[in-house]
Structure formats: structure tokens, C-alpha cells
Image (tube, rainbow, N blue to C red; front, side):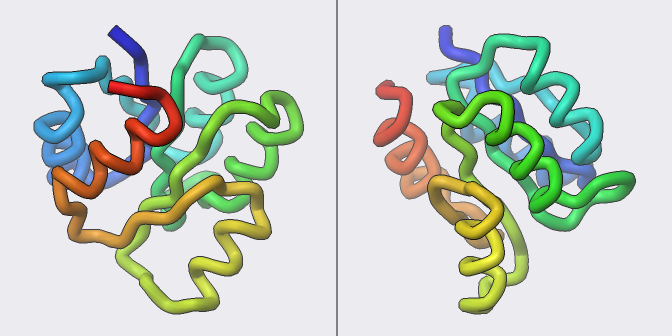
Length: 118
């Protein structure tokens, strides 16, 4: 089963993402951006779902650091802020795609499958 790193500091959002992912993937949690960078660089993940607003290090900086070391690792930004500027910031940081909260399970799984398969 493919492992997906979910960088999410909010417990209820993590619970939702676990529910969405657990049938097809093995979700693994990072609670902040710094932890996400360490985990992404030392572990094997098919994809990263990156919350953009997190403590310690935000998702944009975490994405930049991960992409410098692993440019082929797909990263999908996840944020409650759905402004065009947030989307642009995410792509400029290196994110491959963008999802807005609240997440639709079907659209989330469809987007992930585009990068890693079912």
C-alpha cells in the first residue's frame, strides 16, 4: 500500500484525511512543516499533502525544502484559504496541485490517483 505523508496540524482535519485515505493508501502524519521536511527526506512516500498554514514552519517553506531534495515527489497543497494568491504562492513554492478545505473525498482521491495511481 502506498504511503502518503499528510502534513496537518489540526486533529480534526487529520482525522478526516485519514478517513478519506485509509482504504487506498497508508496515511502518515506530520504535525508541522519542519516535521514534514524531516519525514519526507528520510522516508519513502508516494505523495505529500501539505497544509499551508502550520506552526514551526509553514507549508510553503516546507514544500520548497522538500522539492530541493526530492523534486519528483508530488506535493498537493491543502488550505482553507482559497484565494488566487494562495494558489499562486503554492505553485511558486513547488506544489504540483492545490485542494481547498473542506476536502471532498471523491475529488481528493481522484487528484491523488493522477499522481500515484489507485
